[in-house]
Length: 172
Image 1: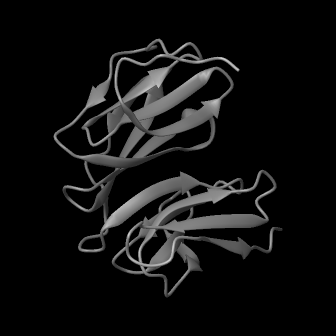
Image 2: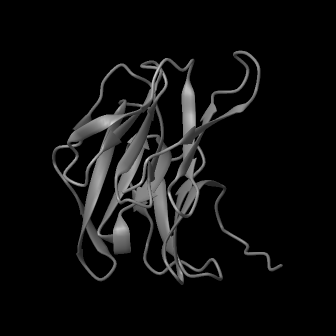
């Protein structure tokens, strides 16, 4: 096992491709692109928003960051190399208390909507496909098995029994 020292407290971590890590700052407004040793490959992307969850689309084509201060998902599209620009129109999902965002093995985007009690599935054009899970108390995080057949949903702590929901999915 090897330890990687960071110069910030990480909140979420994603691996886009071997050798490239994307990390958001815990309760902060910045996200970084790092090499496996923890060195920044570019300066941090900082905004005026409180970033909660981070997801990277296939190959790093876009970075999604859930924003707790505005209840939206900010989208940065890659222009070239490691250069990203924020799209002027974020995904408006107001008053639903957004948790984590993740990209499943199928390339779809999954948003934890705590106040809505669901995990919403979007395609890569950000159109709603379905709800992976409904009638939850407060979904906070979602993760997938490597083959995509199982989805694991974690609810916010402190509001009842602590456990993980496991969903078996039909994968084409």
